[in-house]
Image (cartoon, rainbow, N blue to C red; front, side):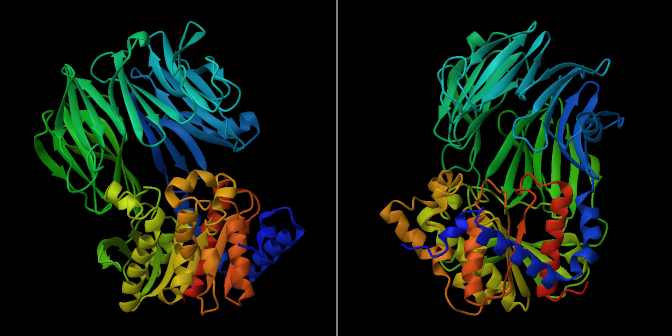
Length: 619
């Protein structure tokens, strides 16, 4: 099939650069001074403190926190700063991004990794916390460090060359380092696609190792922590699984065997027993703390916690005052630390021992209501969505959707949505098929030949809001950009504005651009005639036709190396040539993942300004 705009895939073509420049200028003229009037509010909410990682030690709770453009690793109870990104930047004369850290249980040694100037390969430093000195610096960075009394295990990911056992990169291996010498202890002969995660049991000196092939097949190894030659495979499955912990002679395992909704099993003396069976709603995770199993369920896309005995008897359910998402950050066997997030709460930290105890929180001041509702899709499927309102309702809705890759849209904090809500806007997030909100069957109902279900689900939500008298702006990025662009060409009447970010839009050529071929399992293969048939049926780029379109913003990054900008550029050009009110915003400084905080704040402010202008929100 002939593509009249294929030349736009060449990002160094002068015609492409001119199109981008003209698009950016036209978009600036359209917004006028709106971004200048909104940016301080977005910046204020973007820079609210946010704890993203935590580790429990005998010395206190170590956390990694983002605040006011600075990243720090500090002790929560004393506020003592151990690592400060600003100090690192002064030392190394470059931008720093803290990636991850770990601490031994005594609180004597800390390892942290960081990247310089947005590079993929980082640096790991190990600090002696007794005197604050850096005792080791390793390039490139190490992962999955597990401290021993006289050394540590670590994982090394080979991006190029060969592993010590002669396997071509990319591949991962686990090593043991003692007395300045390191030796490979796990992964011999394994090729690319295998990922390894090593944990130490909280109840005894045992190694718990998960070997995953891609995102499906899992194998679990178990043995004495200090003797890797004795680690043995104890469990294997064709679905995701991982060890929870080893206690009282039983190895507890989380697995998605069955309907894919998640359950807990225990292995004792080679025998497998079901401890917590599958539920109506997906079990996301399970941990053991204080001699109890704490399990996190996803009920209509928000978290519900259940506490069980080690034999699987339900003791209690824990609900939250505002729908949110909860994930465990660390667990020392006696207590666990959990992170909660919602639309108006960047984070809360809880300890779980006998009960849940709030230890830290940042929330947005104001009166907000987080509600939920359902729309009925074309085939009768109930589609859940969240509704976030402030004190007043001006009947203007900003609707976010995704629907793909087994990713759930849980309540999360959007800093640029707060100024919108405070001005009478209603923020909506839709849980469409293709995600993991209701388990693997829900995901499969929105992939490959079933992708139209996702668009129908979104249309149902937008239609319902329109019938309730709302003006509607539809928003999605990446796979969500495919969602909004598909609905735009199919049913432009259900939206008053469209925001399409870093999108996948040309469904016949996505696999030829950048890393697009890795999406074939989700979307289908355009080179296969059967797959090509259903892809062509909905491909937004191939279904653009003369009709009345709402104001549409297409935004991308010139240096986005994941989703090729040509998807956005070609679609914008096709719509523009039909006279559609389309606007283009191309970030020319960086790709969307590597953007600095200020670059990101400007982008989010522009999205807010576009919604305010097109939905006629008073600023």
